[in-house]
Length: 340
Image (tube, one colour):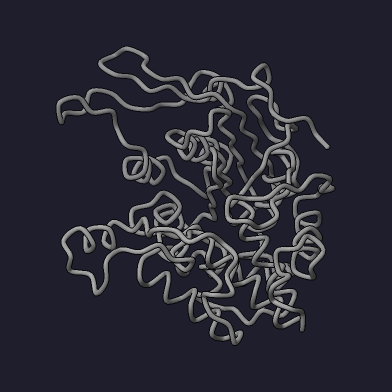
Protein backbone atom coordinates (compact mmCIF):
# COMPACT_ATOMS: atom_id res chain seq x y z
CA UNK A 1 0.00 0.00 0.00
CA UNK A 2 1.19 3.53 -0.77
CA UNK A 3 2.17 5.68 2.17
CA UNK A 4 -0.36 8.20 3.52
CA UNK A 5 0.12 11.84 2.59
CA UNK A 6 2.69 13.47 4.86
CA UNK A 7 2.99 17.16 5.63
CA UNK A 8 6.39 17.20 3.92
CA UNK A 9 4.85 15.86 0.69
CA UNK A 10 2.21 18.53 0.14
CA UNK A 11 2.43 22.01 -1.30
CA UNK A 12 0.45 25.19 -1.01
CA UNK A 13 -2.36 24.95 -3.56
CA UNK A 14 -4.34 28.11 -2.82
CA UNK A 15 -4.53 31.14 -0.56
CA UNK A 16 -7.35 33.27 0.84
CA UNK A 17 -6.79 37.00 1.23
CA UNK A 18 -8.55 39.60 3.37
CA UNK A 19 -7.89 43.25 2.51
CA UNK A 20 -4.70 42.32 0.70
CA UNK A 21 -3.32 40.20 3.55
CA UNK A 22 -2.98 36.43 3.24
CA UNK A 23 -5.35 35.06 5.88
CA UNK A 24 -5.43 31.35 5.03
CA UNK A 25 -3.23 28.94 3.13
CA UNK A 26 -4.55 25.66 1.72
CA UNK A 27 -2.13 22.77 1.41
CA UNK A 28 -2.51 19.49 -0.41
CA UNK A 29 -1.68 17.48 -3.50
CA UNK A 30 -3.12 17.51 -7.00
CA UNK A 31 -2.59 15.43 -10.13
CA UNK A 32 -3.64 15.67 -13.78
CA UNK A 33 -3.77 12.63 -16.07
CA UNK A 34 -4.54 12.21 -19.76
CA UNK A 35 -6.86 9.69 -21.41
CA UNK A 36 -4.19 7.00 -21.14
CA UNK A 37 -3.75 7.59 -17.43
CA UNK A 38 -0.34 9.19 -17.92
CA UNK A 39 0.44 11.91 -15.39
CA UNK A 40 0.65 15.28 -17.14
CA UNK A 41 1.35 17.37 -14.05
CA UNK A 42 1.31 17.14 -10.30
CA UNK A 43 1.74 19.18 -7.16
CA UNK A 44 2.72 17.47 -3.94
CA UNK A 45 2.81 13.68 -4.00
CA UNK A 46 0.35 12.06 -6.44
CA UNK A 47 1.39 8.58 -5.25
CA UNK A 48 0.42 9.24 -1.63
CA UNK A 49 -2.50 7.16 -0.39
CA UNK A 50 -5.85 8.75 0.48
CA UNK A 51 -9.37 7.72 1.38
CA UNK A 52 -11.36 9.03 -1.62
CA UNK A 53 -14.54 8.45 0.41
CA UNK A 54 -17.64 9.55 -1.53
CA UNK A 55 -15.60 10.37 -4.64
CA UNK A 56 -15.81 6.60 -5.26
CA UNK A 57 -19.61 6.52 -5.46
CA UNK A 58 -19.76 6.43 -9.29
CA UNK A 59 -17.63 3.27 -9.26
CA UNK A 60 -19.71 1.77 -6.46
CA UNK A 61 -22.76 2.44 -8.62
CA UNK A 62 -21.09 0.62 -11.53
CA UNK A 63 -20.65 -2.36 -9.21
CA UNK A 64 -24.33 -2.23 -8.23
CA UNK A 65 -25.33 -2.33 -11.89
CA UNK A 66 -22.95 -5.22 -12.57
CA UNK A 67 -24.56 -7.18 -9.73
CA UNK A 68 -28.00 -6.74 -11.27
CA UNK A 69 -29.47 -3.65 -9.63
CA UNK A 70 -32.16 -2.22 -11.88
CA UNK A 71 -31.30 1.44 -11.63
CA UNK A 72 -31.56 4.20 -14.21
CA UNK A 73 -32.15 7.92 -14.57
CA UNK A 74 -32.65 9.70 -11.21
CA UNK A 75 -32.19 6.52 -9.20
CA UNK A 76 -28.78 5.89 -10.73
CA UNK A 77 -27.77 9.53 -10.24
CA UNK A 78 -28.71 9.27 -6.56
CA UNK A 79 -26.61 6.10 -6.18
CA UNK A 80 -23.65 8.24 -7.35
CA UNK A 81 -24.53 11.23 -5.24
CA UNK A 82 -23.98 12.83 -1.85
CA UNK A 83 -27.35 14.51 -1.68
CA UNK A 84 -28.74 17.16 0.67
CA UNK A 85 -31.70 15.13 1.92
CA UNK A 86 -34.49 17.10 0.28
CA UNK A 87 -37.92 15.50 0.05
CA UNK A 88 -37.20 14.69 -3.59
CA UNK A 89 -33.91 13.00 -2.76
CA UNK A 90 -35.54 10.95 -0.03
CA UNK A 91 -38.41 9.95 -2.32
CA UNK A 92 -35.96 8.68 -4.95
CA UNK A 93 -34.10 6.60 -2.35
CA UNK A 94 -37.40 5.19 -1.11
CA UNK A 95 -38.39 4.24 -4.67
CA UNK A 96 -35.08 2.42 -5.15
CA UNK A 97 -35.73 0.38 -2.03
CA UNK A 98 -39.35 -0.31 -2.95
CA UNK A 99 -38.24 -1.60 -6.35
CA UNK A 100 -36.18 -4.22 -4.50
CA UNK A 101 -39.02 -5.09 -2.15
CA UNK A 102 -37.36 -3.26 0.74
CA UNK A 103 -37.89 -0.15 2.85
CA UNK A 104 -35.88 2.45 4.76
CA UNK A 105 -35.69 -0.02 7.64
CA UNK A 106 -33.23 -2.06 5.54
CA UNK A 107 -30.77 0.82 5.25
CA UNK A 108 -27.69 0.45 7.45
CA UNK A 109 -26.51 4.05 7.08
CA UNK A 110 -27.08 6.26 10.15
CA UNK A 111 -30.13 8.44 10.46
CA UNK A 112 -29.42 12.08 9.64
CA UNK A 113 -31.12 15.43 9.41
CA UNK A 114 -31.64 16.86 5.91
CA UNK A 115 -29.12 19.53 4.96
CA UNK A 116 -31.50 20.91 2.33
CA UNK A 117 -32.04 24.59 3.11
CA UNK A 118 -35.70 24.41 2.10
CA UNK A 119 -36.34 21.48 4.44
CA UNK A 120 -34.64 23.22 7.35
CA UNK A 121 -36.50 26.47 6.65
CA UNK A 122 -39.86 24.71 6.56
CA UNK A 123 -39.16 23.09 9.89
CA UNK A 124 -38.07 26.39 11.43
CA UNK A 125 -41.26 28.08 10.21
CA UNK A 126 -43.32 25.06 11.26
CA UNK A 127 -44.84 24.76 7.78
CA UNK A 128 -43.52 21.25 7.16
CA UNK A 129 -46.04 18.41 7.52
CA UNK A 130 -43.99 17.15 10.48
CA UNK A 131 -41.12 18.59 12.51
CA UNK A 132 -37.69 18.01 11.02
CA UNK A 133 -36.62 14.50 11.97
CA UNK A 134 -33.58 12.33 11.54
CA UNK A 135 -34.04 9.69 8.86
CA UNK A 136 -31.86 7.12 7.13
CA UNK A 137 -33.36 8.31 3.83
CA UNK A 138 -32.03 11.82 4.55
CA UNK A 139 -28.46 10.58 4.97
CA UNK A 140 -26.33 11.85 2.09
CA UNK A 141 -25.29 8.26 1.26
CA UNK A 142 -28.80 6.74 1.24
CA UNK A 143 -28.75 6.49 -2.57
CA UNK A 144 -25.49 4.52 -2.54
CA UNK A 145 -26.85 2.21 0.16
CA UNK A 146 -30.14 1.74 -1.67
CA UNK A 147 -28.16 0.79 -4.78
CA UNK A 148 -26.11 -1.71 -2.77
CA UNK A 149 -29.31 -3.23 -1.38
CA UNK A 150 -30.90 -3.48 -4.83
CA UNK A 151 -27.76 -5.25 -6.07
CA UNK A 152 -27.74 -7.62 -3.08
CA UNK A 153 -31.38 -8.59 -3.60
CA UNK A 154 -30.74 -9.10 -7.32
CA UNK A 155 -27.87 -11.44 -6.42
CA UNK A 156 -30.21 -13.48 -4.24
CA UNK A 157 -28.29 -12.74 -1.05
CA UNK A 158 -29.59 -11.83 2.42
CA UNK A 159 -29.85 -8.01 2.34
CA UNK A 160 -28.63 -7.72 5.94
CA UNK A 161 -25.17 -8.73 4.70
CA UNK A 162 -24.79 -5.97 2.12
CA UNK A 163 -22.06 -4.04 3.95
CA UNK A 164 -19.95 -7.09 4.79
CA UNK A 165 -16.61 -6.86 2.95
CA UNK A 166 -17.08 -10.38 1.55
CA UNK A 167 -20.61 -9.78 0.25
CA UNK A 168 -21.10 -10.00 -3.54
CA UNK A 169 -21.63 -6.27 -3.93
CA UNK A 170 -18.61 -5.20 -1.87
CA UNK A 171 -16.42 -7.77 -3.61
CA UNK A 172 -17.55 -6.36 -6.95
CA UNK A 173 -16.81 -2.81 -5.78
CA UNK A 174 -13.18 -3.78 -5.23
CA UNK A 175 -13.06 -5.42 -8.67
CA UNK A 176 -14.43 -2.28 -10.32
CA UNK A 177 -12.02 0.01 -8.48
CA UNK A 178 -8.99 -2.08 -9.30
CA UNK A 179 -10.03 -2.20 -12.97
CA UNK A 180 -10.93 1.46 -13.47
CA UNK A 181 -8.35 3.02 -11.17
CA UNK A 182 -5.55 0.68 -12.33
CA UNK A 183 -4.53 -0.22 -8.79
CA UNK A 184 -4.54 -2.95 -6.17
CA UNK A 185 -6.70 -2.36 -3.12
CA UNK A 186 -4.81 -3.50 -0.02
CA UNK A 187 -6.49 -1.52 2.75
CA UNK A 188 -10.21 -1.01 3.38
CA UNK A 189 -11.64 1.07 6.23
CA UNK A 190 -15.18 1.95 7.27
CA UNK A 191 -16.75 5.13 5.92
CA UNK A 192 -18.90 7.50 7.96
CA UNK A 193 -21.99 5.87 6.48
CA UNK A 194 -20.84 2.41 7.56
CA UNK A 195 -19.86 1.13 4.11
CA UNK A 196 -16.40 -0.25 3.32
CA UNK A 197 -14.11 2.50 2.01
CA UNK A 198 -10.79 1.64 0.36
CA UNK A 199 -7.52 3.52 0.22
CA UNK A 200 -5.72 4.31 -3.05
CA UNK A 201 -3.18 6.72 -4.49
CA UNK A 202 -4.48 10.11 -5.57
CA UNK A 203 -3.21 9.35 -9.09
CA UNK A 204 -5.28 6.15 -9.11
CA UNK A 205 -8.42 8.15 -8.35
CA UNK A 206 -7.61 10.47 -11.27
CA UNK A 207 -7.15 7.48 -13.59
CA UNK A 208 -10.50 6.09 -12.56
CA UNK A 209 -12.21 9.37 -13.38
CA UNK A 210 -10.37 9.49 -16.69
CA UNK A 211 -12.02 6.19 -17.62
CA UNK A 212 -15.37 7.43 -16.37
CA UNK A 213 -15.11 10.65 -18.39
CA UNK A 214 -14.28 8.78 -21.58
CA UNK A 215 -17.29 6.52 -21.06
CA UNK A 216 -19.47 9.43 -22.19
CA UNK A 217 -18.18 9.23 -25.78
CA UNK A 218 -16.17 5.99 -26.12
CA UNK A 219 -18.28 3.35 -27.84
CA UNK A 220 -16.07 0.64 -26.37
CA UNK A 221 -16.83 1.75 -22.80
CA UNK A 222 -18.61 -0.64 -20.48
CA UNK A 223 -22.38 -0.01 -20.48
CA UNK A 224 -22.66 0.46 -16.67
CA UNK A 225 -19.93 3.12 -16.78
CA UNK A 226 -21.67 4.94 -19.63
CA UNK A 227 -24.98 4.74 -17.77
CA UNK A 228 -23.44 6.16 -14.60
CA UNK A 229 -21.69 9.03 -16.39
CA UNK A 230 -24.82 9.91 -18.34
CA UNK A 231 -27.09 9.81 -15.29
CA UNK A 232 -24.83 12.19 -13.38
CA UNK A 233 -24.91 14.72 -16.20
CA UNK A 234 -28.63 14.30 -16.91
CA UNK A 235 -29.69 14.70 -13.27
CA UNK A 236 -27.10 17.00 -11.66
CA UNK A 237 -29.49 18.25 -8.97
CA UNK A 238 -29.93 14.70 -7.75
CA UNK A 239 -26.17 14.16 -7.37
CA UNK A 240 -25.86 16.90 -4.75
CA UNK A 241 -28.37 19.77 -4.67
CA UNK A 242 -29.21 23.26 -5.87
CA UNK A 243 -26.24 25.65 -5.87
CA UNK A 244 -23.89 22.98 -4.48
CA UNK A 245 -20.49 22.75 -6.23
CA UNK A 246 -20.86 19.31 -7.81
CA UNK A 247 -24.32 20.11 -9.15
CA UNK A 248 -23.22 23.47 -10.58
CA UNK A 249 -20.21 21.91 -12.36
CA UNK A 250 -22.22 19.00 -13.75
CA UNK A 251 -25.02 21.28 -14.91
CA UNK A 252 -23.03 24.26 -16.22
CA UNK A 253 -19.85 22.65 -17.56
CA UNK A 254 -20.98 19.08 -18.30
CA UNK A 255 -17.88 17.71 -16.61
CA UNK A 256 -18.00 14.68 -14.35
CA UNK A 257 -17.22 15.64 -10.78
CA UNK A 258 -17.55 14.02 -7.39
CA UNK A 259 -16.57 15.36 -4.00
CA UNK A 260 -15.42 13.11 -1.19
CA UNK A 261 -15.47 13.90 2.50
CA UNK A 262 -12.41 15.50 4.06
CA UNK A 263 -11.05 17.52 1.18
CA UNK A 264 -11.20 15.23 -1.87
CA UNK A 265 -12.51 16.06 -5.33
CA UNK A 266 -12.11 14.39 -8.74
CA UNK A 267 -13.02 15.96 -12.07
CA UNK A 268 -13.03 14.57 -15.62
CA UNK A 269 -13.69 15.78 -19.15
CA UNK A 270 -15.19 13.60 -21.90
CA UNK A 271 -11.78 13.35 -23.60
CA UNK A 272 -10.38 11.55 -20.54
CA UNK A 273 -8.38 14.42 -19.06
CA UNK A 274 -8.91 14.15 -15.31
CA UNK A 275 -7.82 15.87 -12.10
CA UNK A 276 -7.83 14.71 -8.49
CA UNK A 277 -7.17 16.99 -5.53
CA UNK A 278 -6.64 16.21 -1.86
CA UNK A 279 -6.46 18.91 0.80
CA UNK A 280 -4.38 17.69 3.74
CA UNK A 281 -6.38 19.73 6.27
CA UNK A 282 -9.68 18.38 4.86
CA UNK A 283 -10.96 21.82 3.88
CA UNK A 284 -13.19 22.12 0.83
CA UNK A 285 -13.04 25.90 0.31
CA UNK A 286 -10.42 25.84 -2.46
CA UNK A 287 -10.35 22.33 -3.89
CA UNK A 288 -12.88 22.85 -6.70
CA UNK A 289 -11.04 26.02 -7.77
CA UNK A 290 -7.72 24.15 -7.99
CA UNK A 291 -9.30 21.27 -9.92
CA UNK A 292 -11.05 23.55 -12.41
CA UNK A 293 -7.97 25.70 -13.04
CA UNK A 294 -5.88 22.62 -13.77
CA UNK A 295 -8.48 21.04 -16.04
CA UNK A 296 -8.98 24.29 -17.95
CA UNK A 297 -5.24 24.44 -18.57
CA UNK A 298 -4.73 20.84 -19.67
CA UNK A 299 -8.01 20.44 -21.56
CA UNK A 300 -8.71 23.96 -22.89
CA UNK A 301 -10.80 22.53 -25.72
CA UNK A 302 -13.09 21.02 -23.07
CA UNK A 303 -13.28 23.91 -20.62
CA UNK A 304 -12.87 27.57 -21.54
CA UNK A 305 -11.45 30.05 -19.09
CA UNK A 306 -14.62 32.11 -19.29
CA UNK A 307 -16.86 29.15 -18.51
CA UNK A 308 -14.59 28.18 -15.64
CA UNK A 309 -14.58 31.72 -14.26
CA UNK A 310 -18.38 31.92 -14.37
CA UNK A 311 -18.68 28.70 -12.37
CA UNK A 312 -15.95 29.67 -9.90
CA UNK A 313 -17.89 32.85 -9.11
CA UNK A 314 -20.85 30.65 -8.13
CA UNK A 315 -19.11 27.96 -6.10
CA UNK A 316 -16.06 29.62 -4.51
CA UNK A 317 -17.37 32.19 -2.04
CA UNK A 318 -15.49 35.47 -1.65
CA UNK A 319 -14.19 36.75 1.68
CA UNK A 320 -16.59 39.22 3.31
CA UNK A 321 -16.09 41.99 5.83
CA UNK A 322 -19.07 43.96 7.09
CA UNK A 323 -21.19 42.59 4.25
CA UNK A 324 -18.72 43.76 1.61
CA UNK A 325 -16.30 41.67 -0.44
CA UNK A 326 -12.82 42.29 0.94
CA UNK A 327 -10.90 39.36 -0.47
CA UNK A 328 -11.09 35.96 -2.07
CA UNK A 329 -9.43 32.65 -2.83
CA UNK A 330 -6.90 32.14 -5.61
CA UNK A 331 -4.51 29.40 -6.65
CA UNK A 332 -0.99 29.52 -5.25
CA UNK A 333 2.31 29.75 -7.18
CA UNK A 334 2.85 25.96 -7.04
CA UNK A 335 -0.27 25.54 -9.19
CA UNK A 336 0.44 28.56 -11.38
CA UNK A 337 3.81 27.05 -12.32
CA UNK A 338 2.01 24.14 -13.98
CA UNK A 339 -0.05 26.35 -16.24
CA UNK A 340 0.84 26.99 -19.86
